[in-house]
Each structure stands twice: as C-alpha cells, then as structure tokens.
Length: 134
Picture 1 (cartoon, rainbow, N blue to C red):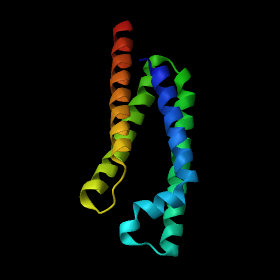
Picture 2: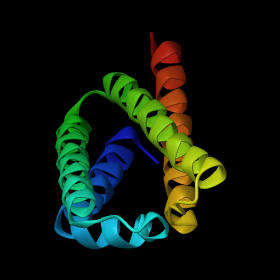
Picture 3: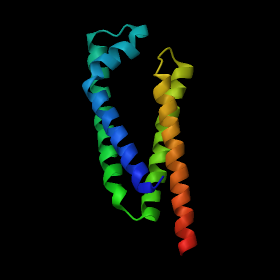
Picture 4: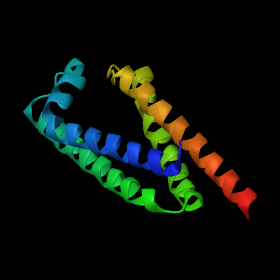
C-alpha cells in the first residue's frame, strides 16, 4: 500500500469513528460505565468527554486526509506519527480493559492495532524507498 492510500484510509476511518463517538457519546458513556452506575451528572460529564474525543478524532482524520498529497517520504513522517498515536490510544484501551471493570470493544482495539501496524510498515517502506532514491 502507498502512503497516500493508507493516509486516506486511516483518515476516513478515524473520521467515521469520530462522528460515531460524537453522535453516540451518551450511549457509549451509559453502556461503557454501566458497571459503576453513573448518575445524571456522571453521564453528562462522560458524554461531553466522549464528544470531545470524537471531535479530536475528526481533527486528526482531517489532518491525515489532507496529508495524502504529500510526497511519499514526507507522508511517511506523518504516517509514522499517526501509527505512534494510534498505538498509544489503543494501548490505553487495552490498559483499561485489563485494569478496570470497563470493557472497551475488543474488535475495535484489534482493528486499531492492525491500522497502527499497517501505518508503521507503510511508512517504513516509503522512508526506505526515499533513502534509496537519494
């Protein structure tokens, strides 16, 4: 896969994820933290935080989508940053799964892990190709 294709794919997927998080923020909060039985204030706070996370996903998605037109070696730098960022946020999801009663959706965590690997491998290949051409 090319940096352009991977940046576009991850940008679109993160954008959809962000929209889903924003629109479904209250439902996500209510279901994800049901074990702690949050009151109305807790649900409101959780909803607002999930909406902020959704907006942040959309922001990152826009940056990645617009970066798809960079030269492959430059796009590889952005893709490396995206891979690291996705890995950090996914690790946080696994951390919550292993250390709290909250259960983030495992299929999403696996999917995001795969995206991080694909982004990192694609970026590494593009960097190596750029180094050989220079």
